[in-house]
Image (tube, protein in one colour):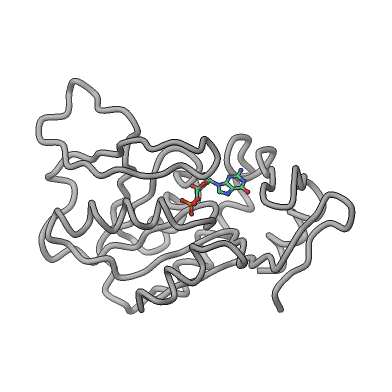
Length: 190
Ligand code: 5GP
């Protein structure tokens, strides 16, 4: 997606050869027009594939997941990182966090995912695939099926890229980074 790549080049910051900061427009500060365009891209990639729900993990994936769900005309749910006292039947899974380098639990209210749901997982980044694995575990526990993965930014040399492709689940990546460094910036895949 050219628009996203251009914005990353303009406003993204390569913090190291493995971490990119995009918090002025994607996952902290939000550019609504860019997010809307991202939602349209994901929706056009997954229209006709029977998606009945969009899922993400708070907080970085919420904006793009919400936009995609709007264009797909399906509900969206985000997994929470702390279990609220109001949750009656939590379904949980554990996730190894790439940025925080520790394991944490994610949970959702059981009734928000149902047997028969075909679920699209959307996230801001794909790194080592911990978030993908946690969501896959939650979706499987609920009796639903993961029917697609939509990623805004993939760091293609990290393990998640091969992990998701090996799963055979349809994948849509909007901006795929081949490599990056503070000195030379970002090298894109195609
Ligand atoms: P994974 O679970 O695939 O290892 O990592 C994906 C999650 O880690 C994303 O939800 C995102 O929040 C975070 N993440 C991974 N790589 C980066 C990065 O380079 N920059 C930022 N800002 N977040 C990242």
